[in-house]
Amino acid sequence: MLDFLAYCGNTRKKLHERLRQLQYQRFLEIIKPLAINVQFIKTLKTLPQYFPISAIDDKFLIEEPFLRSLIEAKAVSNAKLMMRKWQLQLPMSLARAVFGIMDPTVFPSRGFRPHPDEIGGGDLDGDTYIIFWDPDLIPNWEALPADYTAPSVEHIEKVDLHNLQDKHPHFRVQYAKENNLEQISTCHLAHLVTHQPFHKDCTKIAKKGEIALNFSKSGLAAEPLEEQEKPGYWPKFMIKSHEPAFTNSHILSYFHERATSFYYLIQNADMAAMNQTVFTYKMPYIKPEKMDLVILFQG
Image (cartoon, rainbow, N blue to C red; front, side):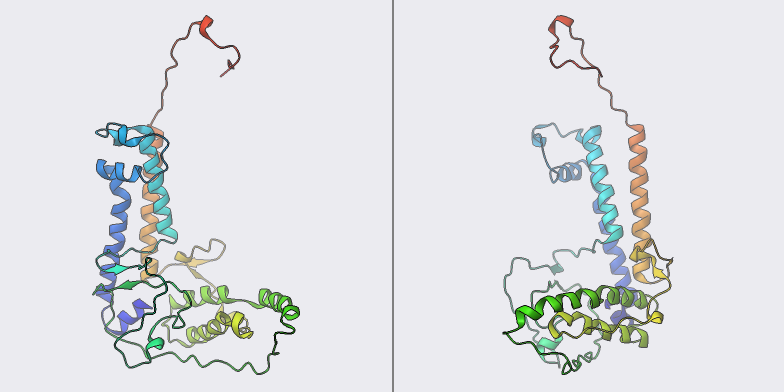
């Protein structure tokens, strides 16, 4: 959606350049511990410690085979997470996750709409927010408010407190059978890769998603997706290995291709390092009379 707003405001090039820069910074954060001793030790201290790392001479710690293998494994794991689901992190000077603020009520001070309508998830029911003021990410174009007119629920059976306990299990069964929010969401995202958000197919699916989202509250289930609303091919970045996939020039496809190449590069480098590293241990000679026959075993 941010990409579409940038497109409408003619700032897409600036947005994409900033996002590429943020992804490149994530790449560097993964690579630095493999090349810089200070970053190596800093990353090593974040891992579970079973011996005092701070007591070891850290001058050549980065060359120690076993400890280096731990950092290499962490780099491969982080690269895989970045390929699959990691979000791009903004600098602390340009954004805040505000995890330390409990039970806040935040309303904007500007805008022509009613304030709660300007906030995504305006019901403030515990959704996670992020606050950022990066000038390259803030769009200069604002879309009109979407139409959130609730559908009629007059035909749905009303349940009062007297028969709530009896009716609740039946509704749970109905919800389990008819809830299709995840399917609608994934199909909507797949369509957004090839269509604009206001395309008729996207708006139709989004309307069903709105109804499915409120199913647990309203008792009104969304209509099943029609066959033509289900994508025949899925964007490669959605990693549906059991379905036909495609890639295009969309920014999400671009980021996924870069992250995938980076992951395989790190993985291949780790495998090459493992093949070149030979752990040798020379057993000290022990006289037979000093051996404990109770714990002696072959091998």
